[in-house]
Length: 123
Image 1 (cartoon, rainbow, N blue to C red):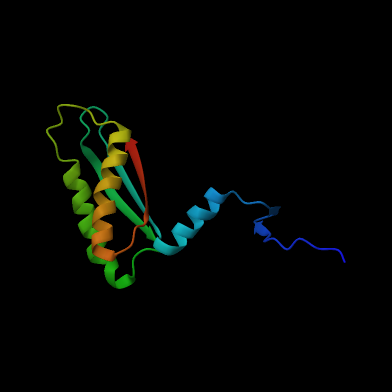
Image 2: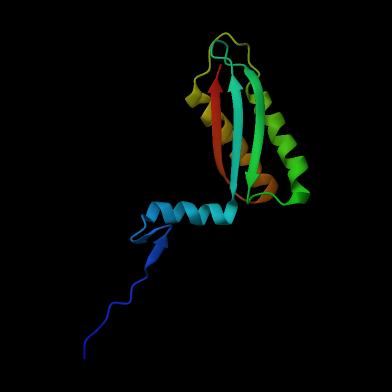
């Protein structure tokens, strides 16, 4: 009697076959804890906040949590960018600062660790 392979076959959009394990891991994390997108504009010369932060949440906050948690997060991000302005802040610094600050606070407030994606525009 012949044996037939019975492995899982993943369908990803229009392709069928192997889906990278990193892609699957990211999708699983997003499905469990959601996404928090943080958009800020900073002054290229001083590193001070020019606009934002705008927060966009997907699959992360319940409607009852949304108002207070997002407003507190905005205040925290604003506070992180309050400095003397003597030295310009680089985008990589801003990304790390936003992720570190909000990651800890979001876990403390909600018990979840959303994927935090900072979008930093220098003007």
